[in-house]
Length: 254
Image (cartoon, rainbow, N blue to C red; front, side):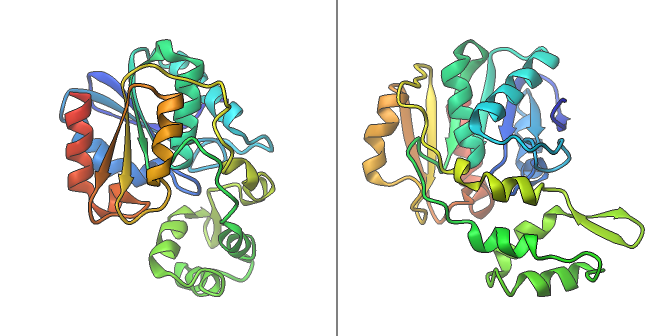
């Protein structure tokens, strides 16, 4: 099965991978801007997310293989590859396995190291949404607030809400499979994985996902990596400071 994507513009292939519980639509505004610089931007939904297929299998190995199949289907080579968070882990593994596909690699606010599970409350809240009772976005928000008090996080999560049919809401993400395999999301890059090409890691100055001590592990796996800090931004650095993020990316890929 092929991944769903939104393809914008013409030029050098530029593939963007969203983070956990996100979707390609999260990147539409930046994708349009990148396309104006002679890039054909591929906003890809990873499996169990967005409009892509649902599957009981979920690991970075299968996500990387999904991406290879997507590139082969669309005849993409020498791509610019950008991944955020979970998408960054997919991008790192893909680059280490298939370096011949990559011209430049960008990783947004994630390190190759292991991260402990920290999405329990969110997944519990999403799993508890009863769409036999919930008939509006407001009702879904109210129910989810019992598990996720932060409004911004709920707004991000509820972008997954859609009308399955008239009068019937649902979620685009495969909550059951993602809950079962949530430990996979924090898995470290395999110890021998390495990509020698040009690589840029972008971190938010308010985020703890890439710490100062991560530089050594980044350099071990990506010897030609640079690390750039985006000011006034946390983990969702591309949404919190899109202008500085955009400029940093364009400067690197140009």
